[in-house]
Image 1 (spheres, rainbow, N blue to C red):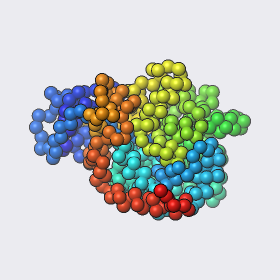
Image 2: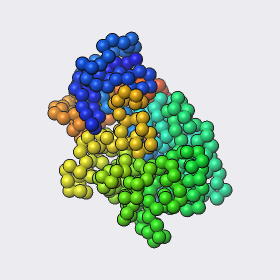
Image 3: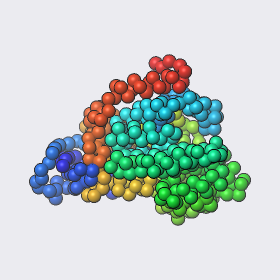
Amino acid sequence: MIRLESATLLTPERQIPAGVLVLDGARIAYAGPAADAPPTAPYDEVLSLPGRVIIPGFVNTHTHLAMQLLRGCADDVPLMPWLEEHVWPIEARMTAEDILQGTRLALLEAVAAGVTCVNDMYGSMDRVAEAIGEAGIRGMITQGLIGVQDPERESLRRGVALYERWQGTFNGRLRVALGPHAPYTCPPDYLREVADYATALHAPVHIHLAETRGETEELLRQGTTPSEVLTRSGLTREHVVAAHAVFPAEGDIERLAGLDVGVAHCPVSNLKLGCGFAPTRRLREAGVPVGIGSDGAASANVLDPFLSMKAAAWIAKGTAEDAAALTAPDVLRMATREGALALGWPELGALEPGYLADVVVVDLRGYAVQPVFDPFSALVYTATAQQVERVYASGRLVYQEGRHLLVDAGEVLASGRAAAARIAGQPLL
């Protein structure tokens, strides 16, 4: 067992100064005041951490990790030209080995920033599974399904096989969803087939939804709405993670609130691609769980959840013209506990006995953060990934003070750079 003491335990619901957190294998055994902590135990390690806060690990609810290799390849371009003229042509040159190296490179950044769970959609997902397993963290993975390019359903069958091969592996750290890319790439009959497989497997579904105004307007012209696409196809018979949800149509938010649907809000990517501002306040007030995602580094450029938290708060405050539209505890909840609920993974995202021991130690003693009057404010509005000191996943220390403990960061960086230069066809700085 590991005992972390003298730190502030911080969750959206409470803060416990000079608290104690006990990790017993993959689970949290105790989280609370020092006075009530177990007095003695055969601890493997006892750490005193004054000046730090301990939070649940960040849950990145929507990623394309291997797109780390495309970072900076196509900036300042709107979404559809960005996809059709830049990203998809480069991706066509990517091999399964490239996807492995891109995912490994992305996980270096994500883990160092305190991310302990990712929800990833891409291709060659067997290699993504390997990379997540190597990194020691948790993930839900999805074979991206482009229905208009899958007339023989080969990709759909690969998605089903992925579930059968990887669901529950790495001691339960890996889960698998089915991943129709979006309504504009997956016709209704294709979505119904995906839904039938999801129902048979009891697999969750991960889909891009209402990402742009044009996408929603086209659905309205077809006599439907984003939420109705989900229900009419049968996708909502299982849990659905809807990425973006920037432009729900009238009535969509109320319908989503009555369904088993979580939203992955990707504020940095949406801002950079000029897609608009997701109505996170209205979604949350209606009862829809909203987590925070980065999207891929090709669009968001960074996988830093601290930046995503700041952007989520700023967008909500600015669009509502209300400084309290999303408070710092609200945003921390979205990045941790609510993100876990958005993925349908309720054992995550809390510092409570019995929950999975995915926790992050953040050092607030440095000049870039001090003075700290309110730890919620310091964590959400001031801190960056640079303040992450320790990361535990399933109770195992995977990152400490700038060092990745399970992987050779230098080798991963060199392999990732080589893969990026090859697919881009140009040298790197």
